[in-house]
Image (tube, rainbow, N blue to C red):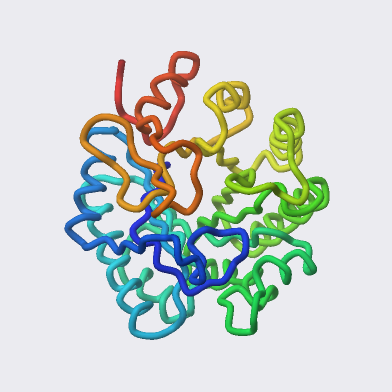
Length: 305
């Protein structure tokens, strides 16, 4: 799964995120339909990857958000029409009306997955990092935790939930994440994807070492074998290779807006990205090619060596 950031505009005030509205250092970019279509073609035709995740900052209800959702629906249609097999949507909590717009696209219920991360299941930490003012988009912890239920109620079967490892005690957070996933499974979700990225770009309150991270992934795979675990290229290729037997989804790419180029490395510009690993990052196909040397089961990746 390749993340495709289509905009870095955000009305949120999350203290842990570079895209927060108060961050005047960020250069804001909003992709056009043509630019996003070009990015999709690069991911599909050059990178040979058939799974994409559309990502943007979270916008308050109003004209700008309406435009974002309308454009996103068009982009989902385009992605599906040109050959993407699985499409994730990660733009924050969706209203019933917005979910209906996606349902009206008449795609297979298992081809479209909604990503909404709780970030932390500790209410005090949640208030400290994501509830900076009553107008913040994530201010209602309970509403956000129930947001994926609305997606399932609309007839969709795939959900993606997650935490930011490093905010709270890892053991407590993982237990709460799995409990939430079990609730959604009982509610009707058929495909449950768990994201457990480690915080990058700042010193986390509860750092997670490489050894702890490996242990966490192994633990989740044992406790919740019905869930798919995502590993992104926040982690090293060596780490991903070590964890291949336990993970189901690899997410190589960049957190920069419209990052994919026809050749060369892809950018991870600190002036436009949500977080920075390196100024330039390996192309998704480069990462997967390195991993395919020891693994031939990477789904939604069609390139043959």
